[in-house]
Length: 208
Image (cartoon, rainbow, N blue to C red; front, side, top):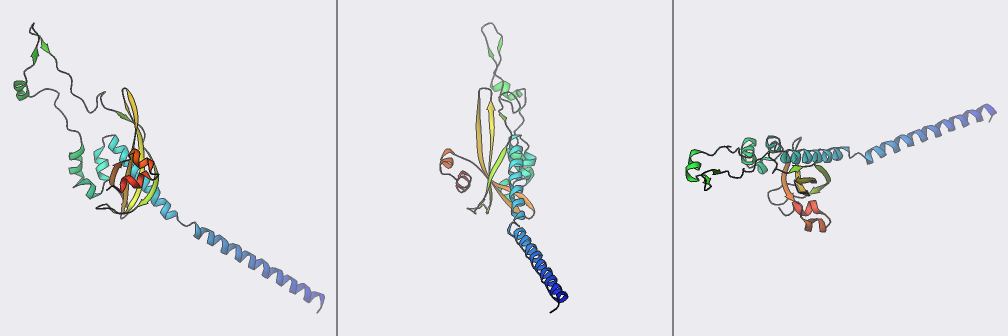
């Protein structure tokens, strides 16, 4: 075999080797993408966490139209309108009605002056606690129990500040997917005993 023939054979072999190497790299890249192709699950988890945060923020802020809209029909116990009516604070009249005045005449001092009663608590007055920003974390799958379908459990927590103290509230929310929508189906307080067991979100939600 001549030098030219040897040179052509060597060139062809080198080209084939490069082709095999490129094919191998392409195949490996595709496999890596497939191996981490859980973007759909990650997106679903993120959506559940966002709904939990939005829901609890609405409840804390007294926005029952939004909060009820983020509940399942089972958890609302009816329509959104009925849910709002059941949960929204009732407006109290600042002045007593004639009947109240007749039944409860004002107290008078010995000199005849009227003793003013203490003001009643107001939903917007200083007696109302201030809640801090809602933090949502620890999303995890939770199985069905009782009337609650399987879903994603999310931990939400926030501070509650009164004039003389501040505490932290912790809740577990069961968020379920209905079609393309995520809704809250259950809300439970996380007790100290739940924290002690190492999986407070699941423990709280599995109490039913």
